[in-house]
Image 1: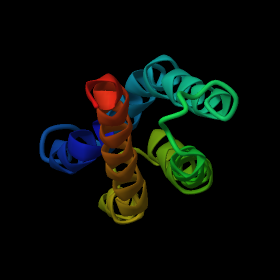
Image 2: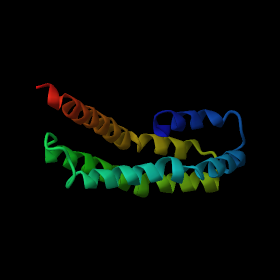
Image 3: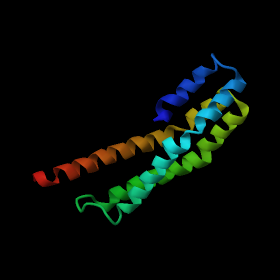
Image 4: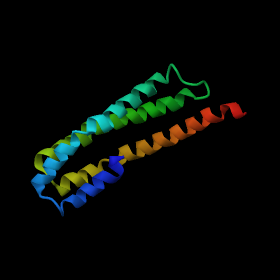
Length: 133
């Protein structure tokens, strides 16, 4: 959820801390990324893959494919676009250009996350209502 609020607030930090202090702050807070974002992202993808074999019959396989494709694109975008920018922020400190690039390249991940959430709500609804028919 950091991408919905955090990145925008980083732009404002330039008014309050120095360029180098931003880099130090970014490095320290970035250490939590693995346990807070990466581990859940990997677990979510592994669980999605497991659904190919262990999914309720009411859930069509095409939904699982859409979820997996969204997650793989998200992982690729994170690895190839976002992470290099994050490393530059660690090294260079506050940079409005880097932050704007981070924000402008993040739209795809936001769209995919919202799409995944919508599909998950639909699938949860199918499962919860399957015995009501």
